[in-house]
Amino acid sequence: MKSTLARCAPLLIATVLAGCGASPPARYYTLQPPGAAQASQAGVAAAPFMIEILPVNVPAQADQPQLMVRTGDGTVAPLYSERWSAPLPDEFRAALSDTLTRELGAPDVQVIKPASGTPVWRVQVDVQRFDLVAGGPSLLDATWRVRPVNLAAPALVCRTRVDVPAGGERDTAALVQAQQRGTALLARTIASAIRSQGQSAEAGGPEVQVLGCSRNDAKTAG
Image 1 (cartoon, rainbow, N blue to C red):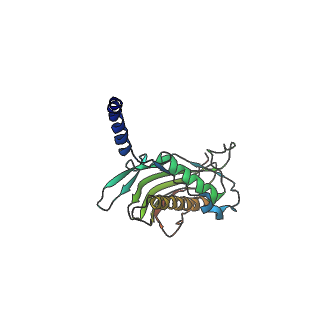
Image 2: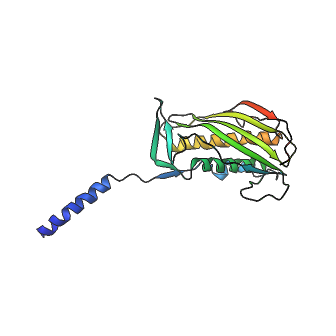
Image 3: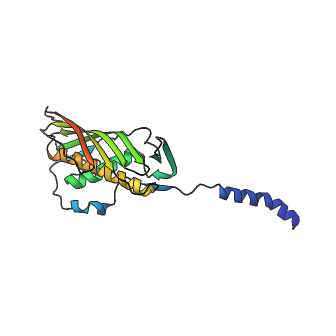
């Protein structure tokens, strides 16, 4: 018996140590808000056009599998157990698509292939800052462009800043919810530009600043 315990002891110790050093299970987050949060848009009439959202560019420091949180001393801390459910550019594109299709009643060409000659509004977004800030607010700063395809309307390029307060200094879920709202507000601002046929953009909410727009009045046939 003693010899058996002696042989098993190293294995038991290794098992205990492995258990003590195990990482906590990862939690996964998305930029797409719950569908119920936008239920008020369910009655929007179908649009006579479609939307196409190009791949989104995000800053390299934010484009990580784990959430990157800015702290008060200017550093960025990775939260290794708190992760995006998909690469951040894909999360961002999906969140934009979710809000734009609801706001405009226009299908996304990645979901439904457009027929030849169908009017399409092409959306391009380049994110300069995507900050999850400990204690808030979360910051989203982006330059974006809407361009008509098979439609006589101008293209519009704008820069938008969105600051959304996040409740709870160390509450990761609150930080993500703030960026969910920030991304939805950006999408609503973009939707206003498409509704205006490329003439102008209106802030999607009080947290949004439209910092400037320029219009290309050349008509786009395709």
